[in-house]
Length: 188
Picture 1: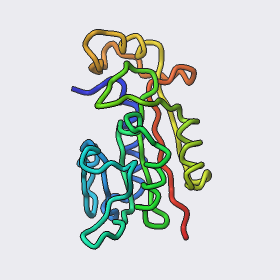
Picture 2: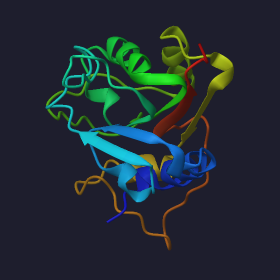
Picture 3: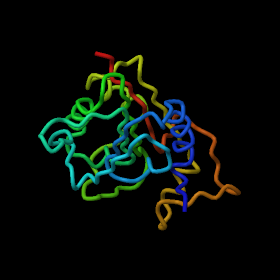
């Protein structure tokens, strides 16, 4: 089952990550397993309930901050009580020149898991990432949605399963369903 809400986001994001040469990247994913589709040099995945990224970065056995080339967060940031603090912690876990990719919903139903706290547009992600220390010139942010997808999100069976025969994927920039961004940590 593929969610209508994620079709365009997944296509564009796969393209962005492929351009980073995933086989050269040490990667950490916060919740989910979206990153398993790539042939990363190394891949570590920890669920948000195991590591509350709002409370601090991931540490190694010597209590040193673990460093990565790429950190992924797919449909996580809307559940965080303190997304600004979490983003600062992600920045600490990235090597200089490393990347943070995140995807978030905008116009979808409330879905507490365990909380549902916020929504962002592409502009909102750009602002969040810039304010946390990512170079604004090193951020790509996009959003996708349309009225058809919004209407499908009101169905009782949620999330809506993508049907290529009937679902319109044309983007209406004034009606976002989801947003995603790839931000580069400045070289230091």
